[in-house]
Length: 310
Image 1: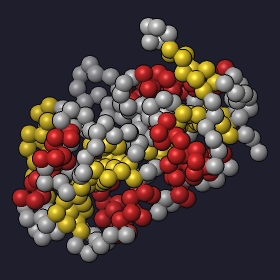
Image 2: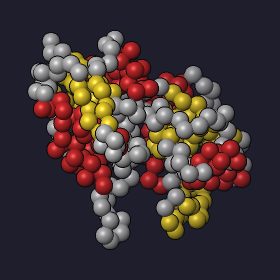
Image 3: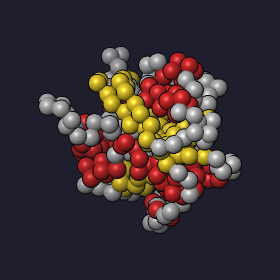
Image 4: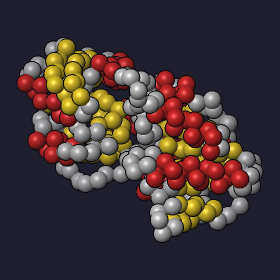
């Protein structure tokens, strides 16, 4: 069988090491050199000729993380790697997936073009902000779902009084997946924004009185929407509010917002490293899921078989 090489970018080393451990294969050797002006030059220190190469790197800020990934892919392509997969646990710029106003970029499409131009043969990522971003690529995209991590976790809890909720209309499909799987009710928080990262108005569609509510979202940035939803749900009579969120961006005043909100717990995945600690945040590892997906890719087996409804 063709040899597998797992590489890590500098920003995702914490996760790549766990993935390599589950996979049972040490990370391959790459050095990231920097010139005095900050220009990067990745150096792959072992042969990748003909190998299945996996580069593990999330593309959260700063933009150097994306540039580093592109350069590593290019280096492997020029070193005659057999097949190159970009493993991007958190796909940055995914929120910019359409023109919602005049004269703005479709940044997610640009990132897709860059990854393909660099030489990626395949993309592996988790919980894209919009499923249709897969269509921006002309190469295979393995879109892993955090349900494979959260559903087993939730099965260990008492859900007899639980109602699932979406913090906005756009996330209804995501929240409905959990409600349907566990046979629970679903409510929706309808929000209105006047500008990005600032919620002006929000209403709850559905009855939450006396219930333990679990909000479901793909990412939490400033935590404004999530905390506003949690506070309103409690005002409507809910007993408690927790949240599931795949990507904990947690920028700006996110930690302060969480601390002062009625949200009891925020359960996230480790696709982005924490910037700080909080007693309200619990992180679940994605390493085992990514390791299994990488193995199935290498062995030409199904990826969808890894999911509860796969």
